Image (cartoon, rainbow, N blue to C red; front, side):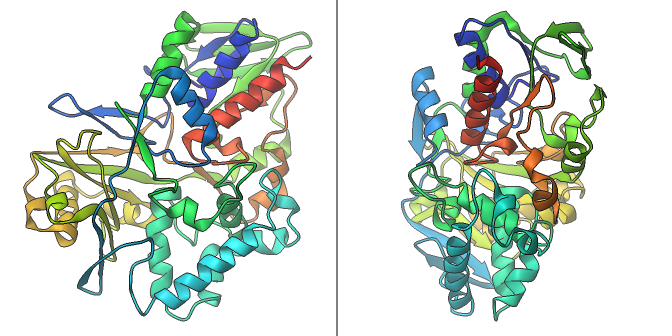
Length: 447
């Protein structure tokens, strides 16, 4: 077997295949494993995440894998108040939704509507929803505009979407959003907006002690020399009795191939025979989100001493949403800003110093003037990653799910598909990556 891609999904697939006594090799284009999961070491040796970071309830597959690998988790810091800045007014609050009287009625109604509608979307086949054609041709932006009174409600929604998808409500369909909410659960617990957006008991509930890249690093360590780095796949040719995979390091033949790569990158492979037209259409209609993570490092988490938990929402870019991103022991202090979607389009290509100043000023608006004097500042722009082209996830454009979505997991001859985008639960998350790798491995090892 050959697995294309050394992220969590590909490594899990290889692990499962090897556990059944089959020979397998992992071909990874980068000089590291982890894909869109990447650790960043601070000056004092502590670690934060430059890529995917959070785990939470109902994400049973990644949490189970962590237990097996001896990896511990810790709760995201939530003690204290969150901060909300809108129209120049700063408020502190507790809970999920900011106490903005102009937005609260719309926000509460929208959440109820989205949760109710998502129940009608099958997690394994959203294109079969009764209103799939209508919902997939309607942008989330247009639907929100038709179902709210205050236009600022849509702006608040961007605070949720930009870190989640690296995109905005104009970019994605109502169907895709409903499906994404439906997948924020497991077989026993239906997905909800609250779980998808929440911190405590939600998708952002916990992080990995030592950074989330520990997961792929330990998987690769156990797999050993079957993981080949700096081996980008250029061509996959399917013959009558085998598949031949050509990389920059040579060719490998195998009975089956699992491709665990971001959808836009799959189209860059030279396929022989060509990909089925319908699958190619699906891949061509997926776009990588635009996202960068900006972290400011302080000697201590000064906001905690003020009774603040480090979570903040603002209507002023570039810091639309902020998180406490301290290591497990709380030292040093780290504040994280997600810069995604339209905010990335505005700020992502500005000069570094201008962006740094804007991020620090954004933190200061939320948490106080101490934020202007960090001891370090670091950022990671996923649009600059050659083998990702963006993050955190690939999003289908309007109409793509209804018209072509049934191809997402359909094998192509000897080729099977993994990657978080192919998962039926927690797509876009590490749990979805684990689930997809397990499924693909089961497919290629089935009798």
